[in-house]
Image (tube, rainbow, N blue to C red):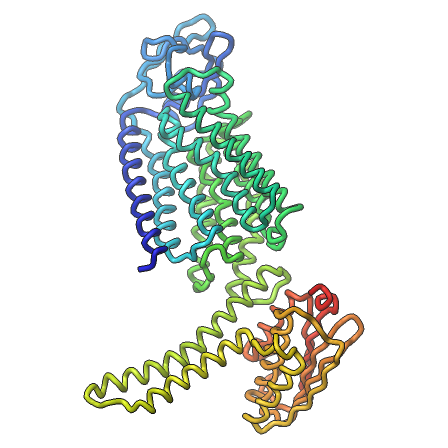
Length: 587
């Protein structure tokens, strides 16, 4: 086991143990009290009921917005610690109110346990923990992957602490404040890992101070009575400020910052904004309608899908979308069914027409994500540079894996079986050397195919000439080669692409078209450099039908990265790669 594996194994155990301990504590605490759902505000010296949240026990009692809170369990409202710290009335069995000069006494059933909200949120946090432990253990260790891991851990504990926090648990509120305050740091650290500069580092420092300030205030609020405006900030305003910071970060990077974020069709800032609208309008700042927080928090988690997809395409996390269509259809069905279920549930609190309009906005924001996933599954050509790169890389991974498995590994297994079947025989030294020489040759061929070192030493023209000579020695084919001396670039990536593409086309002509004559012409054509392969081969199907089989799809995907095009025609077979000259000049 490697050092990194040991670290991850130990970290996983620590996370699981902490999760179990906190879960047990929250479960016991939540089972001892009733969720009332009353938010209050201080008006001069009086505490006034500001809001009655959906799903709380107070919703079924004779309590109205505007009622004056006089006594909580026979203590003055101003002496209640939970009310002063978090501006909520919770963990109370009896409440004395005053309305229009009349005194009202409300008694709550101590046996009521609001298990629905806790179990829903606990289940979500468990799912996230399982995903984190079993999926993330296979990830490559990098700065970006660590950032995403920390982000998921914060989300997991935040969801776990939502219900206890809502009933006045100070430890739960501390977890929520710390998790929320860490989100902008995680996001900015990711941007800094992608484009490190002084302004990013300064912003990370500022966000670190913001995090420290929030934690300090939350810790002080537990034993001490803070000024009302600070209590209001910790209880309510901090959510809005963090959300605005996150949206500002994403928006800035989308418009002027990270080029990589512009390459995705999925608009992450838009998805984030639309997903958090129910939480903002129906719970944090309700004006007309109020809904239970557990029914709107789930919507706020939807941006995680877009972030996961973006990190997959960027290679931050190791996931290849190598799943069957049936599995994807099932996952999408579950996703859409969950959204539909939550929307139907919200119609108990919000008019159907409003919910319908919101669903239209939400699905409109998510459809580009669904489209990109289906494109990746079908490996089709698309305009997006980032997705083209992802598909091209995945195809190259598959080719390399197939070569290693079908040649080197199989040969080695064959030799191993021979040794096992003849344990008493002494294998000739000459046979072992011959086998190892063969493996070394195959590995050199593979290395040359991945990145030909000869290109650096002798250039593109002479490397192509060497390739043509080797090909004519192996096959009964005549190859005519013409190369324009004006074609030149210092980019090893472009030279490598041209070499591998021409080799692929030549191999297709010989192996699939049975060509005996091939003409390779590399020339300047207006604003393009063209690389043309003509052969006299005969194919059983048209080029259009055989595109994927002949590897043209891979070449076209890579050409997209260079803003190039691929042209072909039949009888005779002509395939032409055209790359803008400006791409050669840029390098």
